[in-house]
Image 1 (cartoon, one colour):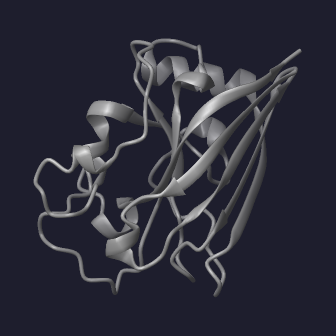
Image 2 (image 1 turned 90 degrees about the horizontal axis):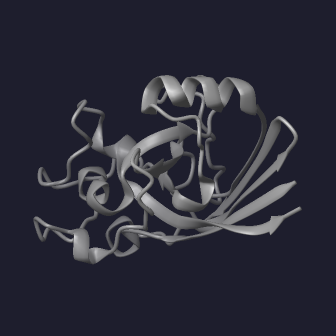
Length: 187
């Protein structure tokens, strides 16, 4: 059994008015990965896309900081995370193994900005789809970072804040928290 954890810290907190934080835990036992993500103080009543990001060449991903704010608008948007965090890889939605990123099956925070997500993921399907998309079946969790995204559609964002190259809405993709995944147990 292998266990991993990411302590998820706020991103863009001063701009969005809330300091989203929490933990993501991953337990791989046999051919199942149990994922548990618990978040606090996220924008309330909002769906939060959440994924792990990384590099396809095995490079170690890190969470973006204000140093990555290349256009100096005071926000770290999704494209600005790419140089240090890599690409969006696996979603934590209703079926992570399907690797279907744009959908509406991500968790929705309650009125207090809290949500808890738990899912058992079949590793054989995940590895197969991961290899299809990234050329390797090595999930390499300890080289990945977790991002939580999403602010209410009513929040005003400057035109300088971008979604991504595929044109997803900036309200959906704006990172609100992130954490580096670290191995804590390997039996």
